[in-house]
Image (tube, rainbow, N blue to C red; front, side, top):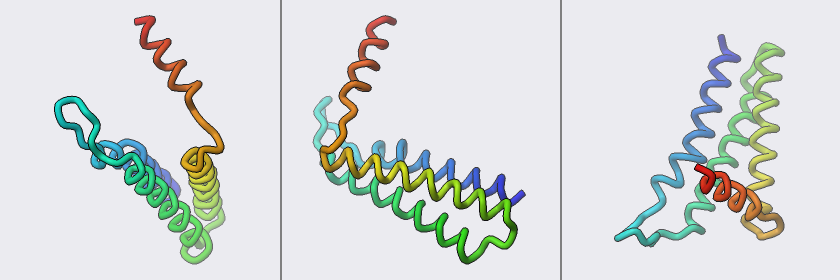
Length: 110
């Protein structure tokens, strides 16, 4: 039961970070994007950092059973990987323009 709860809470947190934060932080006026993309990026990085810290601390301090601890450590690794990718993208070291172009190409097919 607790592993299912951990998975559910982490999935909800990822949904909030990647869907809710950009939706809440974006502001449009007459079809023009007027909010700061830097603010959105900071909120996403902060959410991923909080998820990483919460899972790591829960695994180290709260989890009593090995399967629950393993689940928390797996989620810690997921959040660490996502935070690393988001940080590298924010720093301009890596880019996902290829993905944007591929999605636009697919959208053009339909």
